[in-house]
Amino acid sequence: MDKTLVNPPLFRSAERTLPDLIKTLLIQLGEDPFREGLAKTPVRVSESLRELTSGYHVDMDRLINGALFDVTYSEMVLVKDIDFYSLCEHHLLPFFGRCHVAYIPDGKVLGLSKIPRIVEVFSRRLQVQERLTSQIAEIMQAKINPLGVAVVMEARHLCMEMRGAQSKNSPTVTSAMLGAFRKDPRTRDEFLDLINGPRR
Image 1 (cartoon, rainbow, N blue to C red):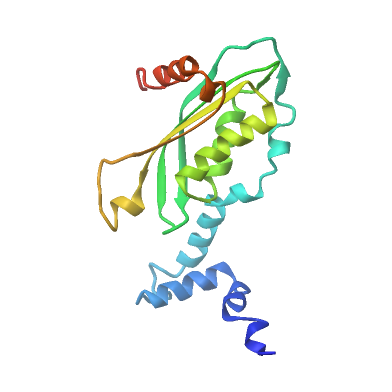
Image 2: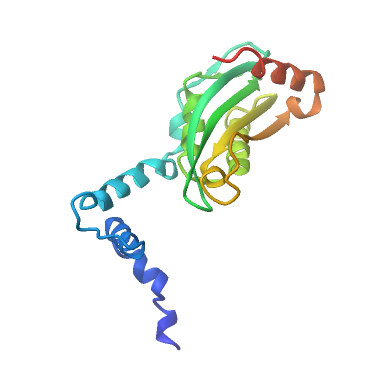
């Protein structure tokens, strides 16, 4: 067997510490990682990346448990204008914007503060906006079992604004509609009317 296949370069590099990898990146970019302005950059970037991808390590059951309440209420619950920040998995550049999440309870409601937390957990991973939108809707459906869930996200992508097309002022909008929001146009229209109302 070719011994190079047992421990290929990709896996050998993964054994290095994150600050070491950032230092190598700086060198590859033509910088001196030992000069005053960059001496602490590898550690700072490593800590920043750990924070920005902390969503991988959150137990969603622990996050939601204790915040589900038996309530007789079957009208729409909407939390709108949730600010979020994420990293594009293609270029590791930020995309950010606002998220609107609605659901129709079926005997149980979720503590309102948990909805922004769910958005934050999935945002703090390497993402694409389409998957992020679906993940938020699907976890709400799976954990609360409501009559329906709706999620709309509007974001600016720096991978599109700073490089490539360099298209400014072109936000990307994605949506996920489950249950009643997909089946009933009136419910979907009510949601869309509410989120398109006066902004803060």
